[in-house]
Length: 144
Image (spheres, rainbow, N blue to C red):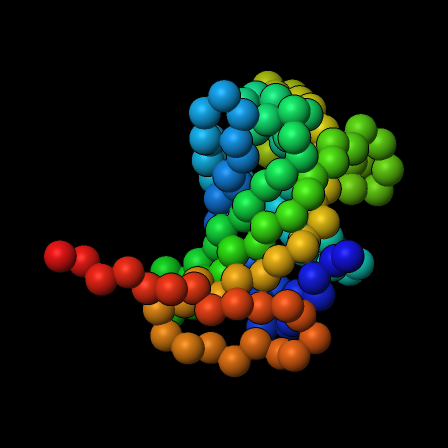
């Protein structure tokens, strides 16, 4: 089931860098810039590099995406399942974006299409999240 992402959360994801975390033989996290929240609620990432990330997704399909607005500290995490896509509208979009950006020096490998299963509000301050999603507040740890 897709966790519906409210518009205020989409805004944070659309306007800021994402970090995708996967796990295989070792945990892996990397930033991504070719990304968007799709109309159907899924998250799409154009994979140009991401070798370890793609290997981990092939192994188990589990991912977490973190995103934060550095000016407001509004932050969210999405946990879900990823699939690798090699054709279709998203693939064509990121293929053209890769060509325009890198002028042929790099090619798109695939699109990582993520089905959100859990949305977590990771903001240090309380933010209102619409009721149409399963959302949790993160626990803030005290530093010694």
